[in-house]
Structure formats: C-alpha cells, structure tokens
Length: 548
Image 1: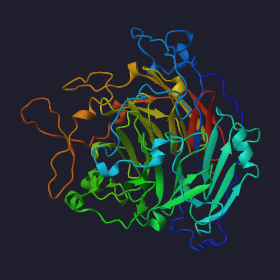
Image 2 (image 1 turned 90 degrees about the vertical axis):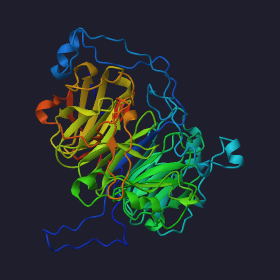
Image 3 (image 1 turned 30 degrees about the horizontal axis):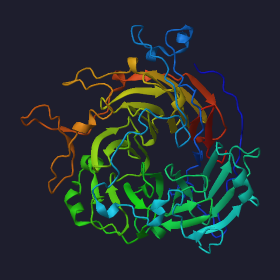
Image 4 (image 1 turned 135 degrees about the horizontal axis):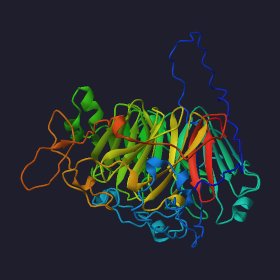
C-alpha cells in the first residue's frame, strides 16, 4: 500500500559560490571538453545519537491477498498458493536510526583479523568507551589554506545541551560547503556549524555509527582534491588525511567507515582504487608492495575490466602508516560502493558500466556484471542481504540476486539517469520489498517486488539452499595467479575430481529474458535533478543538486 505523501519541509541550503582565489575559467571555445571540478550535489547523512524506542512498531508489507491486490503491478504479484507470512515485529531502532536488519548482530571477522599489527591499542582510552580519540587541530582556529571559513552557531553549546537524545541530526555537503543541521529544531535550516573550504569540493561523507554518542561523532569527508577530513563536530577538532594526495591524488567519489570498526574507513578514488585508511595513522608516500607486480592485468580490454590488483594487502607487515590496504579494481572511475549487511561483502560500481561484488575480508573478487549501457551510479543492499539494487545511466533500476548470482529484474520508469536508490526498511520483510529511487528527471519513484515472482535461473546444476545469504559466494575461490594475468575464476567444487573452472564474469542478460517492473508511484518532487534519497519511519527525504 502506498498511502498519501505530502510535502512536510522544504529546506534550501545556500550553494556557496567559487572561492575568490579561484578565478572562473574563461572558455572561448563552446565545443571544448575542458573538465570542470567534480561536484556531487547535496549528499546527506542522518544521525540519531540514541536509539529511538519503538518496540511496537511493525514492518509493513504489501498484502497480496486482500482488495489492494489490483494496485500491485501484475509482474510482481505473488501466486495465490504462496505463503502470506505475517509482518514481523520490529524492535527498537538500530544505532544508525533505521529499522533493525535481520542480520543485525551477525558476527563477521574484523577486517585484518589475524594481523597483530592492526590491533587497536588506544591505551587508557580503550578502557573507557565514553572517552573517544579526537583529532588534534581546532578547525575554527585553523590557519590552514584548505579551510576557508568556519561559522558555528552562536549558541552551539546551549543547543547541544538542549538537543533531544531521540532527535535527528543531518550532515549535508554541497560543493565546497559542509553544514551540520538539527532536524528536530523548529528552524531546521539554521545550521549548527557551517564550514567553507577554499577550492576543494566535498563529494562524500560518512558518520561512524559505532563511536557516536551524546558528546562525540566521528565524521569523515572526501574531496575533489583527494584529501580526506576526519572531523569531530562536538569539539570542532579535525585532522587531514591523504594531504595533497600523498597516497592517491585523484578525487574521492565515495567514502564509508568499515563495518564495526572504530578507526578504519574505505575510500573510493576516481582512478579506480579502493583504499583503506586509519584515521589515527600518519600518511606516507605510497609505493606498491612487491607482491602486486605479479597480479598486474594483461593488456587486453577484457582483462582490464576483470582484474583486481592488490597493491597493498591488509595482511602486510608494513602497517605503521597509511594506507592499511590498497586495491586497484578498475581503470575507470568508481562511482559508488556499499557494504553488505553481513559485513563481509562489498558492491562496487564503475563508470565503465561494471558492477563488482568482492569479499573484502579476503580481498577477493567474486562476481563481475555489466550494465546494458552506460555507467552505474548508485547501489544499495536489501536489509536481509539477499538482493542488491543498482541505478545508472541506462535510466533503469536493476535488482540482482546474490544467492543466484544473477540479474533478476529491471525497473523501468525513469526518464533520465538514476542517481540514488534505497530500500525502505520499514516496508520490507522476508518476502516483500519496497525500493525508492531518484534521478536527474527530478522524480521520486517507488517500487514493490516480492520474492515469489522474481525471475529465477532456468537451469542450475545445483539448487542452492534458500535463506543462506552467501551460499553461492562462499563457493567462489580465487584461482592461482600466474605472471601474466590476475583473472579470477569461480570453482564449483561439486565433486572431489577436478572440474572446468567458470569465469566470474557474467554475460549481460538479454532484455527479453529479464522481468520488467513498473513503479507503483512516480512523483516530481523538485525542479532540479535529484541526487540523494533516504527513508525514515514516517517520511522520505530527498535532496537535489542545488542545495534543496
């Protein structure tokens, strides 16, 4: 059931003009292809400092048996003989302010477990979880040329004391500005702190859900210059990582804290690299380690799309300085990545239209898929980890099954590039899912699909046991590496005898064999292209390129 959506708040965050020291580029040739500085529109992170207790809230699902059946697209209606399971009760909000995932609490090894050089030793800080490490420099008093201006609210301390523990903070980056907002305030657009940077555009950011508390938030932000800022807004302290691109000089297109880690985060750079940094380590000029030379790709087009070059492994004994790990996954720009709910896998999207699934704990490439055409832009995992949804320049939302290692459906309805996708965790259960997407056509679309009517493989040598999130991927093994190629293959391991290995590269599924799902709702929500989407229990939040 869709219900009625009405506009509740419309905030405009002023987009800062170029810094005075950055003279506009005069281009007398209208056909020139001079690249402008990268920008990412308005990206948000929502933060709840304390879990909101909603012990009686329920996960909503589409009821395919009652009178609303006619409102559901026929392509995703369940068959009448399929079980109509009851909606499950949802507990309190998880640490990041969303409905708990069925995988919440599932144990996964820590990244780098087994390498004693990565053991976190914080001295007396480790004994007191309420006393977190903070960056060293005060950003308000900073004389760095990287920071142009910091504008804290005149009554910041008072507002922090009065902030409700169940309230909602938001961090928003737009061009060269970062704004920290209190969405529970009567004047939501009145920032807690606003930071203007000199020439660098903030492209992405993330909040550490493990370390956040009433008096501490660990915040990281990636820039068009390759620099990364670790910022603690309560104390206004900050540190600069990968300063002047000492490790990698290309722009940071996406950044995330590693699951369940207090100090490690992963940054995607636009040269096709994924790099793990430690917020507390010093930087050093990076030189690829010796073992990387044996995994360089062969010089043909197909190998360039497949290779995974480990320039520095997490198991390296050289862990005194950043980076902790360095992987080259593509020769094309990485647009986005997302961690799976089981904290073992990562989905990586590239501008060349490739979509990779990696076991980042083992540093292995498991699967590689390709779009119909154009680059892939955005990605998210279902709350149970069974499905991955992507959007891109083919104007389609695509649904992939990790369990079946295949594309299961395309969602057609956008008129331009799809820029953000997200699951609504309050309207997902074990069989039915709600997806939202936004795009450069200025529209918000909602999609419903059920497991029963998804396209399944027509033939399979072995039917995987349902319900096992990694049943297919656990069988994927890395083949032995020779000196000329780093191609990864999956070994079926069906018998004790040797069998032919099957490549991890999956062919593009023909449109005629792919289920096409129409949206259940489409609405123009702004006059500017949209670039971000988030679900809360009682609302949907979107943002656009110009600061709204």
